[in-house]
Image (cartoon, rainbow, N blue to C red; front, top):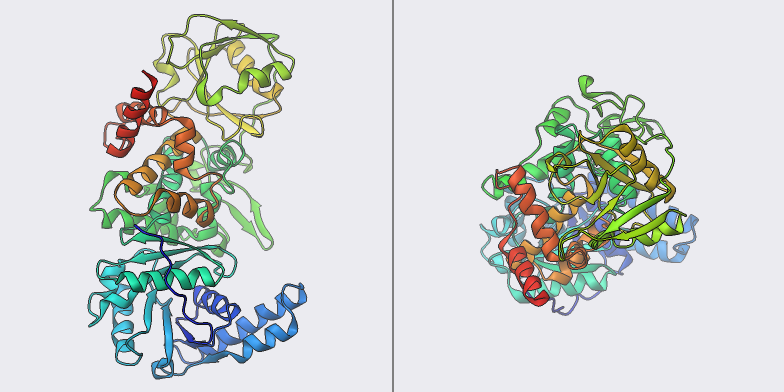
Length: 529
């Protein structure tokens, strides 16, 4: 797929926005900022006028903050006009719809517009979950219909997915791409597949957290804290879905799952379905996974498993953090720690003696040995209990030096002394420690492995270029690294082997590594020989 940009729509040409909710208003504001005359239309009488007033208020606040001068605001407002009917959009060079996320509504709107606008007018849908191909299907000239998927809030979020439907003309997609770039956005080109880039590749971020919750590995507040403070993600999945709206997030998940013919990798969560059915939709209803007061979250993880709150346990809403434990005086390090290879140096910096030992098999994961004989292994997709020795798994971190929290999963065979040594060692490195249940893959390792595989699969199937996929995930959902870049650093073999082990633990097909990942891992093995 090419990222060629066509000529942007000239700034003196009219841009029309149909649908004046939050997203429609945001898109209109972006077009105004780029200098376009903007027409607003909404099927509900009076809504377009209300939207224009709301946009004027936002521009006024920008003036108060010094981000826009008064002359710029007045010039923008002079270009903003509500349109009572679709006929008022006849001279538009681009019409962006942000109406109800229902296929028939979008199809009827574009069919009506086709009789009104000029032949060179681009028709763009802001859909996040429907097929652009299907939206354009009834049109006489479907080649001019393209997806322009903005992210909320549109004036602030830099990413725009430019989606080519099956019948979209290359010239139309290139012109849409060029226009988004001229508007100061970072556009990425993608094919019309369920979820496009972001909503497709991001599914495991939510799904694995929900699955860990359902397995009672940890409560939502702890899972969120580990993904933020160890994984480097801006927000945890439970707080993020509360912000998005549980009903919205669950609907997108269900739409992608159904569009992929109920592929097990995209299976929705029963726990989230129950939350939606209970009306606990997140911030907008005052309670979701967390409870919210007038000024924001009042309690993180309020409730327990029995009352449908954050559970299990965690009544006070804080992540589980281990009590202080003394650090061991020395540890042994055997073999290579691969993604955790910075740990021995950090341990020495903390004043704990590191004794280099033998016994590891070359090319296989090494371990840290504690004085009690307990061994620390990086999470690898297996359960710690599967080992024939006392083992504690520690989770993956984006950067072990800067991580503020580490999750540990001890096997049942680990005694109190070994557990305390493991906790104390990481506390000596300045980390909060969350001890979770012994689940395969833990939290960060499992999530990152799945994100990497989804991204590699999308690239291999031509959904978007590798560069655009990483860009989309960094800018669209604020991931700390693009998943393809992250996979390359961890090693494709590590990602593949982690998923193979998860697949052995859960033989449903959910964790079966993609063909693209297997090929890259095999190539890595060939290079190593």
